[in-house]
Image (cartoon, rainbow, N blue to C red; front, top):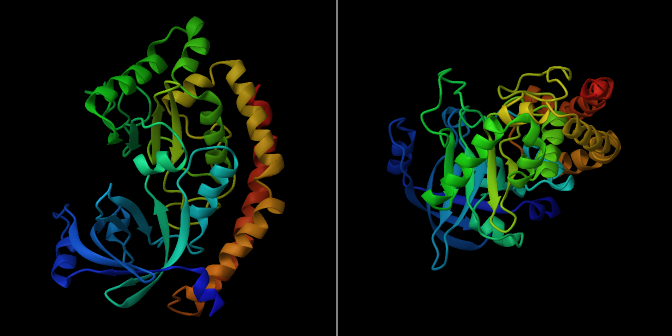
Length: 358
């Protein structure tokens, strides 16, 4: 009984005819429904979330609660391809611990029309409420939704000059006027002369926070988080852009298909988008990144720090997981050792590569 109290209960009720609409690949709108969160009932709008994940047997959902005030939004992630169901939360919490803005998350028990669907991850939306909770001034927020969000002038998709420098981004908060700041930022990254770049970029980018984000992304080995799967926030008081992680279930030794990946797959600089590539041209930024990476490897990206967290998360959700057969249970129980081995081997690999940043 105590275990059940540790995981909130989320119940979604949607008309079967509307679920059939969501199942139609051509249907992109939301449908109405009801959401019971523990004992509170809300009217909601919902749709499947994700491009790849919406076609999986266990769907993820975007939920918008109706209210008299600003509607509350959140995501219910199935974490279908992650046998542990904890990698996303583990990674996002690690970003927060290392001083990077990141959405909060919590595991919940999820029901659809009365049928138990298993453990889901409740994921905070990065929006106005996200900023308000953290005491941050209201400013534009962009989601990087495809590979054009790589901070360059040339599209990695078409190999041609981008028709718009906002290509690849979805504005979540702000107005079209805010797009001018994003365009100017990308131009500064790519067109500022070398003699001016080191000083000039610090007028547009929170460099320390970007390098902290990069260090965690590299340690967790998220192969799909450098050209998209991130959010950008421009603080109107400082005028600086900050980067936030998104979708980190394909980490700690597994990729987006759930396949195991060796700990030396990604180099110490990550997959170099236009911003990282330009920063690494300058010794001062390489030195700053190395110092932050060493700090992370010494303090947080260690088995001493992460093992108790992995154990707690695993033990909390295990009684509520749905296992189709004994092999699923065996795989779940083996994920802890797999992740701990990855942490040790990944850390060792990165330490051996530190001199590459000289």
